[in-house]
Length: 178
Image (cartoon, rainbow, N blue to C red):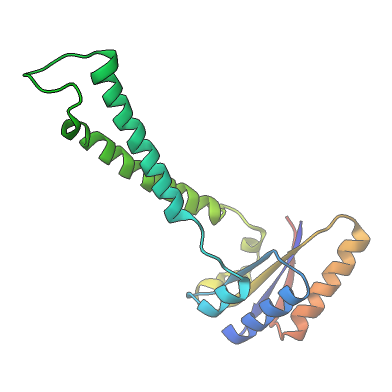
C-alpha cells in the first residue's frame, strides 16, 4: 500500500482536497488537523459507529449470564435454605450482575473504540516527515493511500494523486514509503 501526504494552508483547502480525492474514487483517506473540524468529518464520510449498541448488548449479556450463574447455583446445583429465605431470592442476586454488566459495557466500548480508530498506532510513515509535526499546531494534512500492485500502475496512480493534490493547491506533497 503506497501513500501520498499533502499539507494545506487552510481548512477550506483541506476539505476541497478531500472532496476532489473522493470524487476521483479514492476511499482510503486520512485527514489531520490541529483541532476538530466538522467539515472534514463530513467530507470524509464519517459515520457513527455502533459503540453504544455494542456496549449495551455486551452489558446485558454479561449481566444475564452472571444472574443465571447465581440462580443456577442457588436453585438447581446446591439448593440450601438459609434463614427461611426462598431459594430464588432475586434481590440478593442483583448486585453482582449489575456491576459485571457495567464492567463489560465499559470494556467493550473501549475495545470497539480502539479497534474502530485503528489504535494504538505506535508508528506510521508520516511520523518520519519533519513537516508532519505541524499537524498538532497549524498544519492541515491529507493522506491518500492507493494500491501499488505493479510498478507501472503505481507510477500512474502516484502521478494521478499528485495531480489531484496540486490542483487543490497543496503547499507540500510527500510520498510515504512503508
